[in-house]
Image 1 (tube, one colour):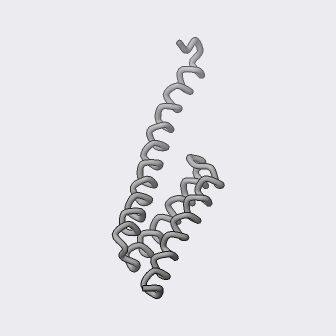
Image 2 (image 1 turned 90 degrees about the horizontal axis):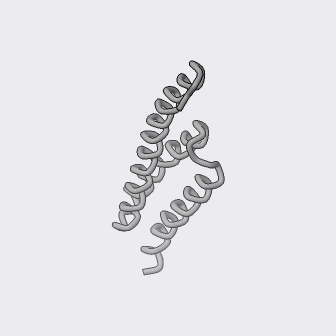
Length: 93
């Protein structure tokens, strides 16, 4: 239990920040899931648009400190690779 006014304030502030960060991460996950589902459906135009919408959201998470930059870079790279594979798939078939 907090013993000082500053410790009490930190508890309140940490709770507010946790709510904001939770909402931010949830929003990012939604964008990523949308991109993954369009890639899975095989719709190249929708997948490219979903990736283009997800990228800035993910990078915003990095700048706000809720995600690590290498994690986001890896996820963006993997999504982009899957979208690129969609482009190549019709050309081969």
